[in-house]
Length: 108
Image (cartoon, rainbow, N blue to C red; front, side, top):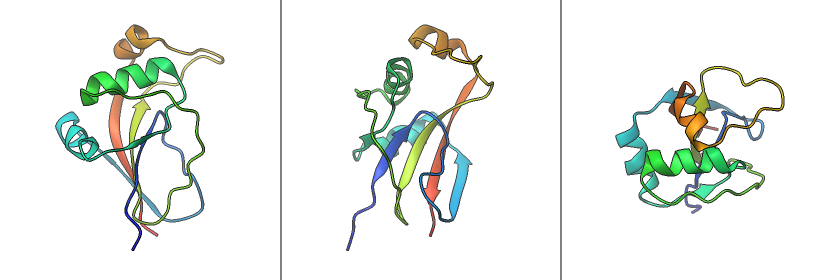
C-alpha cells in the first residue's frame, strides 16, 4: 500500500488529470498536517520563508515537479490578488500581500 504524500505548493495547480478537492485551511490545521512531514515544492524563496513562518518549521525552497496521486494532498499558499507580470515577492512583501492557506487533495 502506498503512503500519502503531503506537498507544499506556492500556488493552487492541478498537477495531473484527476479529481481534486480544494478547501480553505486555517493555520493550526495546516501546522498539524505538516507536523507529520512534507515535500516542499515551493520554488520561490519568499514563499518558502512565508510558509515556514506560518507552519513554524523550516520549509526549503525546491523547484521540483509534482504529480499528485490519488490520496495525496498539498498545503497551498494561495495569493488572493494577482501579481504584476514578472513580480516576485520577498518575505516581507508576501506577508503583507493578501493570501490564505488551502488544502488541495487528489481524490481520484
